[in-house]
Image (cartoon, rainbow, N blue to C red; front, side):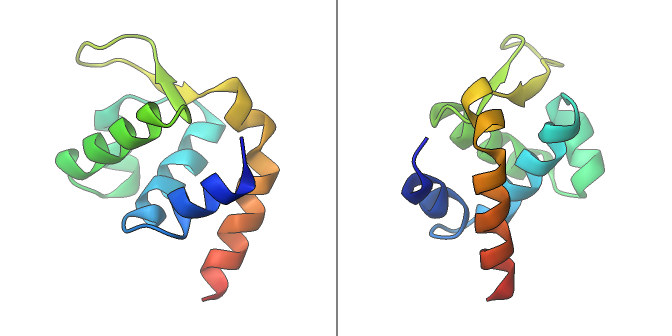
Length: 94
């Protein structure tokens, strides 16, 4: 995964903060959308939207497509997690 791509996904586009929050939660353990809604205090449509973006960009994957499917970080995102943290720190400074 390229650092430039992660910059765009987190710091260069609207909603990056929500996507970063989801990535951070999923780094700890898998969650379904409803649990992410609860943990992040966001509405369902917002979380669903950002999960879809993360899934389309090979950041997360799910156990299935049905209600209650668990989402977790893909292996390449786990490998690049320290790069993500560096981007997140830099983004938070602004």
